Image 1 (cartoon, rainbow, N blue to C red):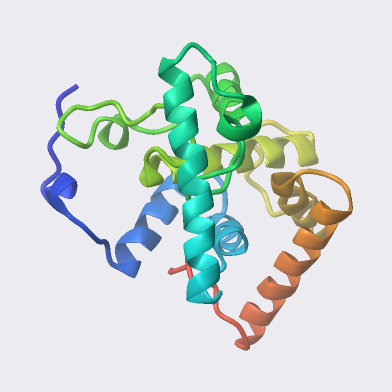
Image 2 (cartoon, rainbow, N blue to C red; image 1 turned 90 degrees about the vertical axis):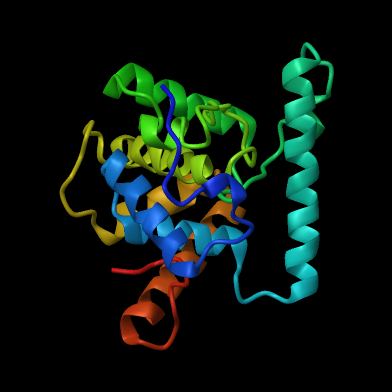
Length: 209
C-alpha cells in the first residue's frame, strides 16, 4: 500500500510534544488500552526530567542496540543476543518481548501490530520491522500491544476493557519491566508518580487528554 503523509513526515526533523502525545493516544486506542497507562510507561522508560547527560547516554546506548539489531536482521543472526537483543527504542523493549507481543496480537486479535497508515506512512516503506527503536512511532504500537497482552494476562480475560483495580494496574506495570525486586520497585515508582499526577504535584509528560 502506497501512502504519503500530508505532513511530509520523512522530511521533518522534529515533532511537537502535542504530535507525539497524539501518536501515543492513537496507539493506545488501536490496542484498546488506557492511553494514560502507555504515557505512564513511556515516562518511566524515558525520564524526560532527567539530566541532559543521562538522556544523551540513554539515547546512545539504545541507538547502538537498535543498530546491532538491524545488522543482525540482515547478517543471519550473527550478532550476539547480548548486544542485538537488548532493550532499546522509545518504549525500551527487548527484541524478544516485542516480537512475542506481536505474535500475541496476530494470534489472538487477528490484526497487525499497527494500522496500515502507520506501517506504510513513509512513501510506502514498511515500518513494521519488529526491531525496537527502528521506528519510534512503531515503537508506540509495539508497547501498546504488549500492554494489551499484559492486561489480558493479569485480568485473565482476553480483550478486557473494564476498569483495572489498583493491584491489577500495579501488576501490569511491573510486568512491563519484567519480574523480581527491580520490577516491583519500577511499578511502585510508577504508581507513586500516577498518584502525584492525580494530586497535581507531578506531571505525566506524555499524557494529553
